[in-house]
Amino acid sequence: MSPGATFERVYNELKRMLAEGELPPGSPIEPALIGKQIASSITPIRDALHRLTGERLVEAPNHNGFRVPLLTEAGLRDLYSWNGLVLALAAKQLTTGLKLEGLDRWVARTDTPSATAALFHGIARHTGNVELGAAIGLLNDRLEIFRRAELATLNAVTDELSTLAEVATSGDRAALAAALLRYHRRRTAVVAQILAHLISRVGR
Image (tube, rainbow, N blue to C red; front, side, top):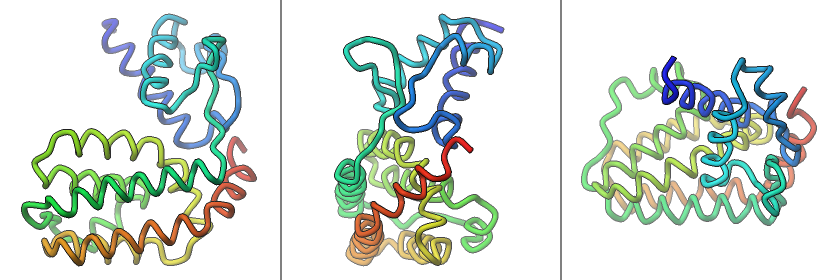
């Protein structure tokens, strides 16, 4: 396997472990231990961790090793709010409605966190603004672990997503902005419960 392919494999595996809680929030990340788990040498693991640090999925406090960020209630509230602000900007610049063939089937067959990420990235891409798409892509990565915890904290999340997707396909900017605002307010109101569930379940 080429060095580039090895790096991408390690990087994607680390992202998966972070998203699924195999590396619990607040825990140190030991490159040697990770190397044994995913059959990799230390160098590509360190390279991937540096990239993930730049993406704020990993921390390197005082350049003394790596750890998974431990988000506070205020921090998670800010993260949801920032995601909402970026998407609100995207909604104002939407050029056309999204094309989601077989909308109900798409939502039903895709796990909700992945479908949410795809929907939000689609909204950003339909503005024609590359920077909006890149910003939402990074936010999707940071929010994935919390979106998994939402499923046990909020009710009717899949129905909510279906409704949001229907509005996005309509191309109605004002309706989309309003729906996105409701979506994010619902989550900022229960950040304590989301974090409590995550802490109780992650890493099991």
